[in-house]
Image (cartoon, rainbow, N blue to C red; front, side, top):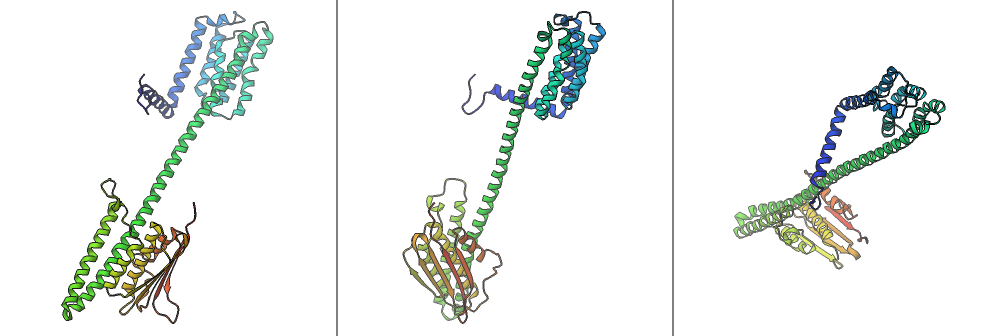
Length: 412
C-alpha cells in the first residue's frame, strides 16, 4: 500500500476510526455488548452439548442431559455481569466447575471462567488475581483425584495455561490502555500550558504595545500642546514666532504619525514590512532629536553624558523611553519657568545610570490618569533587573527627580 509521507495509510485511519467508534458506542451503551457476548457464549455452549462435542473430552459419558444443560447455562449466563462484577461472577461459576469436574463431564464451557479473569486483570487490582486463581483451580482438584489418568490433559492443563495466558493478556492490555491514557493526559496538559503561554504572551504584548503607544502619543501630544500654547501667545505680538510654532507642530505631528505607523507595521503578519520597519525602536542616538523637540515646546533642557555608550538596543530603548516620559511629565506638570537637566552615566558591560531633574513647581506626576506613566517606566526597568526612583527632590531643592539604574549585563 502506498503511503503519503507524514501520513498513515488510509486503511489504518479507517481502522482507527472504526475502533474509536466501537469504543464510544460501548461506553454509551455497555449493556448491548454484554447481552450480545452472553447470548453468543450461551449458544456456543448449548451447541457443544447438542452436537455431543463434549464427549471428546469427557471422562464420564453417562452424565444426564439435564446436568449438561444446567452446567452449560451456569457457565455462560453469569457472564452478563462479568465487566461490572468479575469476582462475583467467577465465584458464581465455581460450583458449576466443581460439579463439572466431579461428574466427569468436563464441558469445555468451564474455560469461560477465563472471561471474568480477563476483566479482573484489566479493571481490578492485580492482587485479586491470586484468589481468582484458587477459584479457577480448586474446583478441578476433586475431578483430578477421581479421574487421575486423564485429569491433566482434559482439565488441569488447559485451566492452568489458560489462566496464565489470560492474566498476562489482560495485564498487557491494561498497561497499553494506561500508557495511552497517560499520553492523552500529557497532551491535554501540554495543550493547556500552550494556551496559557499564548495568553501570557498576548497579555505581555498588549502591555508592551500600550507602553509604546503611551510613550509615543503622550510625549508628542504634550509637545504639541506646549507649542500650541506658545503659538497662541505669540500670535498677536510676533506672527513670525507663531508661524514657527505651527511649523514645529506639523513636524512633531508627522513624526508621531510615522512612529505609530512603524509600531503598527511590527504587528503585521505579512512579510511586506522592510527590516527598518520591523525595528522602529529609538535609541540613545535619538535623544538629541527628542531633546530638541522638548526645547522647541518651551522647556529648556541641559544634557550631560559621561562614559562611552555600550548599551544593546533593548537597554537603549528603555533609557530613551524613561527620559521621554520624564520630560513629558515635566512639560505637563512643572509649570512656567521650569528647566530640566539630564545626566547619563555609562558604565561597563551595558550598565547605565540616568538622572532627570526639573525645577518645576507644578503638581507631581505620581498618579497619571491612565496608570501607564511611571508604571510603564518601572515595567521597562524591571525587564533588565534595574531600579527606578521617581519623587520630589530633597529640600530645599524644588522640582521632581527620576533616577534610572540598569546594572551590568550578566553573561548567559
